[in-house]
Amino acid sequence: MAIRGIGDAYAFQRLLWLLVGTVIVPTVLLTLYGVMAIRNQQAAIEEQVRRDQEERLRVGASMFFEEVAGLDQAVRTAVLGCELPCAPRPRGISAAWGWRDEPPPLAAAIALPDSGDTVWHATPQGTIGIFVVGERKGAWLLDDAAIEGMVTRTQRRASEQFPEIHLNLRRTPAGPATPVEEIMARWETDRFEAVLPLERPLAGFEVQLTYLDDDPVRAILGPTRWLYPLGLVALVATVMAGTVITLNSASREIRLSRLQTDFVSNVSHELRTPLTSIRMFVETLQSGRLEDPERVAECLDLLGQETDRLSRMIERVLSWARMEAGRRTYDAEPVVVEDLVQDALSALRSHTLMEPTEGLRTELGTVPPVAVDRDAIVEALVNLLQNAVKYTPPPREIVVRSRADGDFVGISVSDNGPGIAPTDRKRVFEKFYQADTRLSSHVGANRGSGLGLSIVRAVVRGHGGRVELESEVDRGSTFTLWLPVAR
Image (cartoon, rainbow, N blue to C red; front, side, top):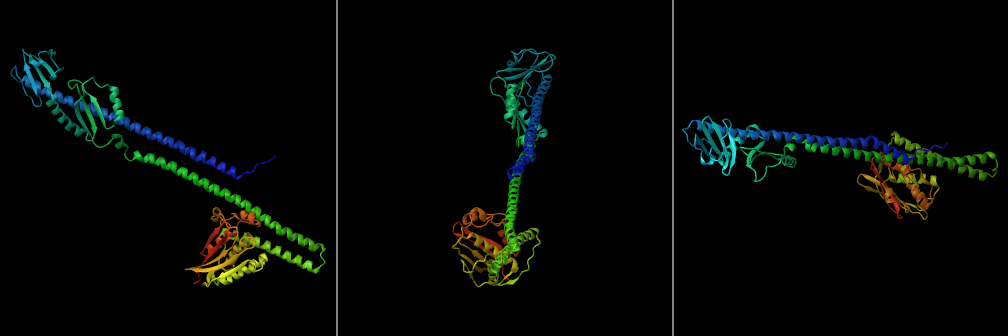
């Protein structure tokens, strides 16, 4: 039975669906719930404001009617206390009459009510109220002057009870009365004002309620009007940003895992090659088939080279492991740059058997000594030189230079190889990254392990320096190690 492995794409899809199910979907649901809660809160506040408007309008209308009742009582008192027929002028009244037999002209055509409350009639001159108290009859005209006095007194009383609003009595346009549905619709569209049509004795008028400061809904909501929506936006933005960062981090980890797998495969392949050669040479020597001393010496020489090659590969992996674990230490001492370069060239020749005249030269300037761990920096320079030799096809031209710049000395290794693409320049120092695989196919070099430049950068940073790369495709590359000057 075949078992499918967990590939990179599968692992990424699994993580993506996990984020969708546990983070994104709950966040969307929470956001929808928050939007609904905000809308319900605003609707509840609007309903509360509308009820408050209705209550204030009713209170304002009752205030106006109380003013009318006060004027009516003043007329009654004046009529009951005067000698009929009379025309009293209580305060706030423009015209009033009292009689027993002959009514005044304005009231002559109006039917008298039974004893009791005042009855109001609409006439061309205005609204007239008529009342009967025993044998005495009275009438008075509610005109603009009386209404103005009522408005002033009502506004004063309303401001004491509701300081945030302004009540006003205004005459409605001529025509039929405003339907209640239209009034309610007006309240829905205009939250700053509310009106209430009145009946007699103030028919033709309406009470207008105006908020003095701001929309009452906005005043009640206060800072929460923008705080809650802003909180939802911040929540969604944070979750989306976190999701993107998580996916990028997961993608990076998956890519690193793939590179580690490739590294193990490459190292295993590279270890297998010298081991196979060593086993072949040993078997050849054990078989006794080589009787020529020169052939035996050649075989032993090759066996030693393969053993050294195997040791260097193992040492490189162990060196990287020590740096990853933070256990590698450096013993810095003043070292002459020329000595560092010569040690690196000697190590390179022993590794590659390349003659010193094969396209490699030095152009060392006069620079001060550097404070470094000699063996570690020689190892870093050897890595750079090996890469230059490995990826530069004949006729190769490799130059080692040195120059001083302030408190640092730069040791550079330049070649005329194929160069490094811009997309790879920032990543060639990452562990396990193998831009050299593309270069290998270009120049026919062997596949690397992806650790050389990572070790170089770690070593130089451990000394308080830095590594710089300048490269141009088909024009070569220059790696520069900037090391601190010895004090």
